[in-house]
Each structure stands twice: as C-alpha cells, then as structure tokens.
Length: 178
Image (cartoon, rainbow, N blue to C red; front, side, top):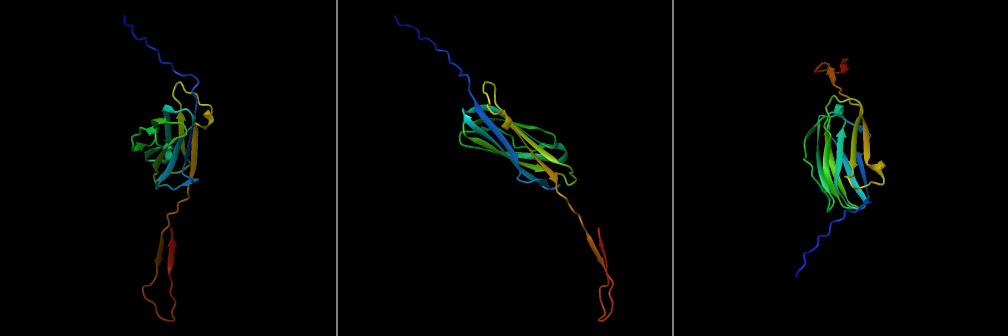
C-alpha cells in the first residue's frame, strides 16, 4: 500500500544578523531661507544577511520647512515603497525597505524652506531591523544633519540727483541704502 507523504516543518533560522546603517547630509553647514535644500539619505545593509521589511524614517525640522518630497533609488535587488509626497511640515516619513546584504537604497529629499525661516534646521534619519533580525551595530542606525540659517541681506539702493549737469558745475546726489 502506498504511504502518505510526511510534511517537514519549515525551520526559521535563528541568529540572523544584519548591520543596517543610515546617513543623511546635504554636504553643507547652512541653508538659505526661501530656497529648497537637497538632502541625501543612504540606507546600507553591511551584511551578512538580507533584510526584508526594515523601517526607514526621515523627519526634517518642522519650524524651518514648508514641505518636502522624496525619491528613492534602490540598488539591484533592493526595494523601497515610498509615496513621493509632498509631505507637510511636522510629518515623519516612513518607508518599508528590502535590502540584500551589501546593497543600499538612496533617498533624495527636497526640503522647501520659507523665506522667514530662522534657527537651525535638523534632519533626522533612522532605520530599524524587523523582528527576528539582530543588528550588531545599532549605533549607526540613526543620523542627524544640522544646518544653520545663512545670513540673508535684502538691500535696496536709491539714488536721487539731477538728470542733467553743467560742465564745470557741482552735482549733488543723495544715495540711500536700506
């Protein structure tokens, strides 16, 4: 008589580690109020195992932005699932990513600043591993970029004087700078 096949239970491996790391930077130390700033957020899986379902978060300073939008470019085999935005001030963006070992995903954030922005602008990015995976180096799972407001001058110059002159005469101009 034939015998029934025996089901073999799947074993979930234990001890899976993956060193996820994140950086955020605009490669500057200042921002100019009223102009957009471009930040790069890079999430890297330093291995040794792939990570499925890591959570990436990004939050720029709410007091120095109007809104922000994002794009994501994953390495081959990696995925990100972002909605491009725009995201309003005060919102924390979160995305689920899958990153094979030794691969990365790169976000580009365009942050729109109001012309009256003052104070430091802080951008914080973080990544966390899903349940069942241990990150041996959690110290590189968060990154901050802080920029100060660049001095902005809004000068106007008004010159008042005669429209014509007489050769050999004296001309008086009034120059007002505000």
